[in-house]
Image (tube, rainbow over the protein chains, first blue to last red):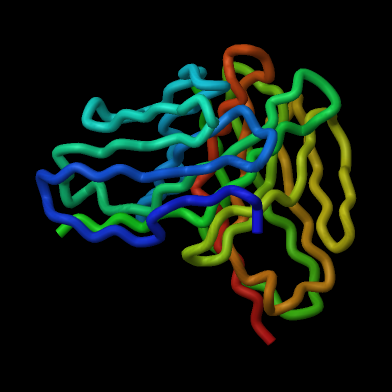
Length: 116
Length: 113
């Protein structure tokens, strides 16, 4: 158990719909990252938040958005869903210390999204 | 940008040693990570290299050559439970610009009896 929690574990929805995925980082971690993992692709970085502010952005679609709240939990919103959005969505967190740490990312169990 | 290459699949025998290679081309480099991922589960951290050389951690070791853009993960005394995907990831920079990792496609290792 990494200490990162994600809900829901599974989500089945239809094309055109909107869903929200939730992540709670490990206690003390300030950074939250979102990744997408499709069957035919590796882990694709979507976006990073640090202490409530967007820190880095990957190839995140405009239909997707995220935010990090004052209690440091984060939500990933996916709208106008398409079949190709079906994937595992992982959240990870890290402490992001300036020294003395690998700053490795700890991954949550993921949310499996199926778009029908 | 980052370009990370690793073999798609490897097969090895229980009790043997296997080496999984990773090559990378990056615009910036501040560390290389190896993660293990069992099917349908979360990746788990295995090792970290930022300086050239070998880092040993029990049955797992990881090597880095920054000048060659090359790393490998060495797994000794293979066990059936080591059957998983092994992900190589490079970090761009460790500063206020982020702690972003770019992952390779992963190497699926099958350990046979």
